[in-house]
Length: 418
Image (cartoon, rainbow, N blue to C red; front, side, top):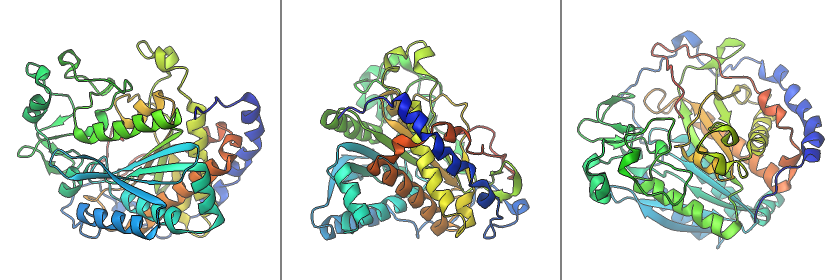
């Protein structure tokens, strides 16, 4: 079903909701008593255990269990295979008119989103509560947890794929330079020299039927991607299938991690628990080569979805101050080669979650807190979407979310990299 553009009346009517966001800072200002002293923070990669996170084998077992205990409310499918022949699964729940696509672990060292998605599937697939029934009636939720299983098993950002393997798949690239996002050296403490790979979150293209062309390589971060990897092609195919079924994919959410040492803009002793964003590309109406996407692009709707997630977290900050430490991800990025950028250009409301730290910096520390943060944000967004209240939220409330403060880590990042 095609989603109509938000009317001016709906936006104006939502102005009153801004007061909810405006009323939050008093709560959010409370100190995050569960956080360590800021000066002890470091982004230095460490060799930390990851066995307590859900691995690929465990994910398959858990998805099979959820399908079984849901009594048919959850349908699990294999949507493709990774480059190293690991299954990539989707789990679908609900039969409503609004299609919602959720992905996690596009970077294999960003693991909390997978556990949050499993909890969300457990709720929507097994609960008889009015909320769960409303989600199933109004939404069709498709989750692709751990979409980059090879990277997840290696606990690193990039997948496990050589340029020679790319050329074998796409002989037309035999004389092309390797893609700019091809890792062959050190990256975030991982050595890719023996097992190269790609940052597959730069492998998307808003042209959903695109096939790789030698003239488009090596490209840059400001360019579109190519659908080189089987992982991104699998998610692209799910997205295209939902478009064919529903007319448009209403919402796309991608779950990530960021550096461990970002602080709130007004308090260097409060670490950012999570950053949100709905903006990933420049306005296509004013960007040469992208004007064909202008009619579908709906930044205001993406902002409303993010406000719904933000409000849900702020509402629980009295009970857990870490839920109050939510910021806006940097807005000066233009990344049409990301899944979020490409799908936003195709008309989806896009939502980015960036929780604190990665497995190389925090390991199991805060694992439960971060999983609960992601779950709470998703819960608020999906509840607002299923009830229709998201249309009453004021997009201007998004711009009032505090910006992410600086990183105080001893190896602070200088470039935003979702």
